[in-house]
Length: 161
Image (tube, rainbow, N blue to C red; front, side, top):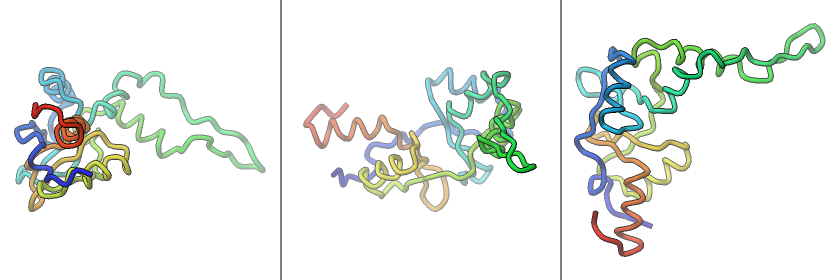
């Protein structure tokens, strides 16, 4: 168990975007910086969402997103796939701005939380990164890669890189 604080490993200068950022500008930022996601912040620096490469997959596969399969049952239709999920996928496929694409239910960590607790939250919620917030404002990003570095450094005696 790694009881070191997140701030020792988090990425402090990771870019963020605003909800009004266009999808084109978002993709350009992610591609040029080799990122797989960024926090979405309002003008005051408060985290209002997160957008990841997973969200962008629907930009590519939009034409393949099939209507949910339905089966008739007693004068009703039973959807075999959640209609709400399908609608959200279509919304992401047609997104123009980050606000259309972002996830607003954001799992976060703080700079003083332990690596162990942050990694546990990532595993519980199947997320690859957590915005690091102090007093509601974005101060960094903690990723799966940071967990690997922590394991190497603190559990397996690897170098500090």
